[in-house]
Length: 293
Ligand code: BJW
Ligand code: ZN
Image 1 (cartoon, protein in one colour):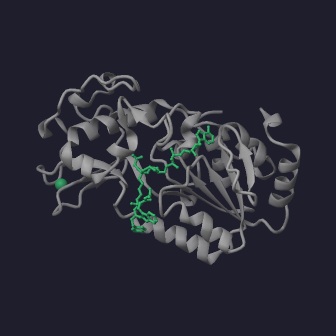
Image 2 (cartoon, rainbow, N blue to C red; image 1 turned 45 degrees about the vertical axis):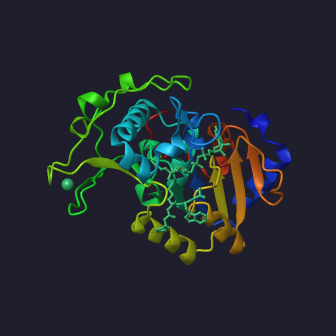
């Protein structure tokens, strides 16, 4: 464990706070950096490419409208990678915290990879704000079909991930996939299925937004853990300001330092290594079984 990465005064001050009676309610806002140590790429920065495409450009309703085959190739690759990946010690630490009955805790994850669930995070304390790679929805406006947990890989013969390898330098065009090669709705039989994720410009699932708002409004959040996120996507990013405005404290876990932030605890480095050390006083190692020991 790379405890030496954390300045001792930062760790002591943080541990004093999380073990004090002033820290009863904790919210964690999680982003792609949490799954980075599990081998899954982030969105922004140099890792944010799939082949020669910028991932952000493919995560839009316009991209799907323009070329559903290309977007399905991107998401098929990501479904495959997520299924192959293992939850890391960062996922496990948050999962363990979710089983600590003395702390009122909620994780809001922007990640769609399912790794927190597979680390045995208490599902009642986990919100998938941007949906899931393993949810499928019908695009036909008159059809409400949705499959919340579909792990078939590949979804169709043409979407076999072995042909979709991630290689930033790979500018070779993928074969164009017409709609008949893509997954279709078993209910209405005509509608094209799409990934059940939230793209820019789309509404977030109301139930997730309501549950988050209720948690924040019902409790005074004493501490928000901002884990592996660039904090640019809204409304996720707004939860940090809401907690701050309530007088709550902020702890940031990121590989990059924010020199403008002088108020938060900043834990700089790989959050899969730092979270277990930072949250150690709140973790009961005995009671939780997760997929990866
Ligand atoms: C590590 C690490 C390691 C790396 N350890 N750290 C108000 C103001 C301004 C704009 C808006 C606003 N309201 C709405 C908008 C518009 C828009 C928006 O946010 N635009 C801004 C970008 C300008 N928002 C929307 O359109 C949202 N919809 C909406 O608001 O509807 C209205 C509504 C609201 C509420 C209720 C009902 C209706 C939808 C946003 C959807 C975002 N979708 C995506 C794709 C999801 C599907 C998929 O996965 O393909 O979500 S985009 C992408 O960004 C993805 C991510 O979840 C999200 C955030 O990215 P994240 O996770 O932070 O990743 P990165 O790569 O950016 O950062 C990684 C970080 O980790 C970096 O900081 C690294 O340094 C760090 N790191 N390794 C620690 N080992
Ligand atoms: Zn349908």
